[in-house]
Image (cartoon, rainbow, N blue to C red; front, side, top):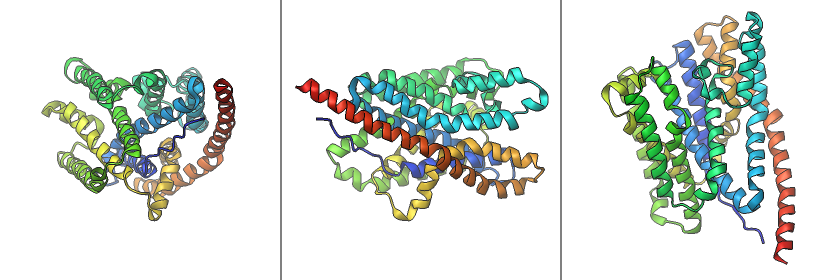
Length: 379
């Protein structure tokens, strides 16, 4: 008889939506310089939130598929990841290559073909030009895809390990990687330093905190901890307060851009502690929220989480299109938000959801086949 795997972490969609809009605000601020100067430039923290959420969500998916399909789980796992990521991603890459990247005007078709191929193979994250490439925000997808591969290879081992062992290894790997590129490596610019520190080894601790979130929620499902449930609002409050305090403190030092943050931390020390501290605060907020019921009053905000992938992939193209149309900065800000929402909703219902529904139907069929095979083996 097949096991059931009902474990679900509450309110993740709420924070997916928040993370997506933080990234939008970051790019609006960077391109216009007219949106909440000194504050919206910190929207890059949205990527940190995405990575922690991804660590939890992928751990949950691997746990369920590994337990449900046994030896067949790897193929189904990759089908899930490809169906979730690629349909909208391919559409966004093609639109960007045709209209926004400028290859038609410049006639640089060779460069355009290389960019498109590297993006489709998820190799663009290995090149320092990734942020100025075909689809700038997609640099984080390349890192996530590397994490997906790591999880597929390591899950049989991870599923048998204590969370403290996994966290220790991840923190050690990230610490050594980050300290090398922050303190030892001689690089030409802070942007290049940020590129190297943003590779998977440098971000591994963020995914690991997501794994820890999953393991805690899984343990609580089997053995509820009353004190932790009672402390959920305190966890969220402390995490949010520390994030806001850091946010405001950095703003007062006028270090709202990524390169400025890196330079400021490099001068004043504390790079590693600050990065890990921010991630711990994000983890505390997500853990507290995961222990809370999802509220009907917040359904519109959950919906932003549902369409967050479209928001993330489309927002820079919308901003570029409005600037190409000759609109001033304030009008770009005014029109970009509704247009991003409209495009993200249209692509979700027209592209993402049909593929996701097809995946679920295939999973039901596969589940029946696996159940039959196990029944025969049991005989």
